[in-house]
Amino acid sequence: MSVLVYTENWDGKFKKLSFELVSYASQLAKMLGTTATALSIGEVEADELKKLGNYGAERIISVRNANLKNLDSQAYTAAIAEVANNIGAKAIVISNNNTGKSIAPRLSVRLKAALGAGVGQLPLSTSPFVVSKRAFSGASFMEVELRTEVKIITLMQNSFEITETANNANIEEMQVNVDAPKTTVCDVQRQTGKLLLTDAEIVVSGGRGMKSADNWGPLEELAGLLGAATACSRPVSDEGWRPHEEHTGQTGKIIAPNLYIAVGISGATQHIAGVSSSKYIVAINNDKDAPIFEVAQYGIVGDAQKILPQIISAVKEVKSK
Image (cartoon, rainbow, N blue to C red; front, side, top):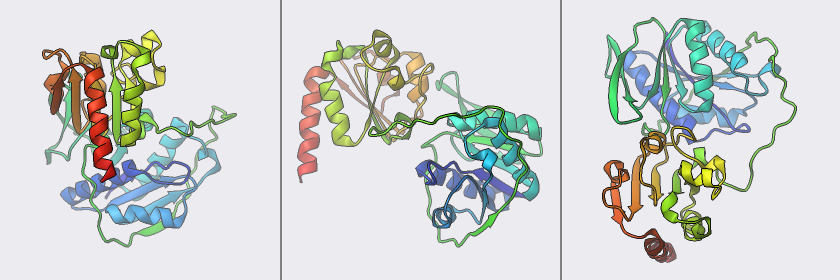
């Protein structure tokens, strides 16, 4: 019996997301009286794999297979299921990102396992096994009991504190039988030179309160100073002021940065659903009754065009010291 955690890698490197998952799985394993096993799929060097042991994984399984070169949800599901069966995993932890949302439901069916999707904390209890998750677009919480022998949890990004431990984990190679993917990947083009919205620790986002695409300069300058990604509300992307890839919300990208700065965004339910898992939300809006202030930890009432230059000046002053 073990807790298996799938750790996604990017070009052979792990990111904070993977370490957060391992930290969570390690604590879950302690609750269950067992150990955490980290699974890596793809070409990852031993030195990089060892990093997973620093966050609580006592065993690291590396799977390398030509049929798993590119992400294919069916192939990856088969691989994770085979590893889970081989080690007798009774709990499986996956990220609640696009990859996890593609794999977890398939894995649930294959293993006949209950799925707790979008969990943000450790189980409330293990007997019965009850998890808490957001519901109704983040407006409330619900408790879900997972009754099957094998449980699957997808963890919300930035919802669990990373904990480093001194641990010399064992690394082993495991062979899996995976059929060739039915989909052929002809070419992969990655965005370069820009921080990806889903990877950003800080996000600076603008809404219709910015009034025009021509007014985005200060917002971009603030993002640059903070090392942040830029985002926008759906009306902004619909108007063509900003690219659709920056659209956050229920119908856009769902993100969970450490800091989300919402400038000129009223806070419609659909938008809040996509950013409510942010650790801190700072809202700037000239309407004191804007819904965004109900979910923001910090709020500034006023004209964004006047407030942004003052914030930029303050950030520059702090960085110059």
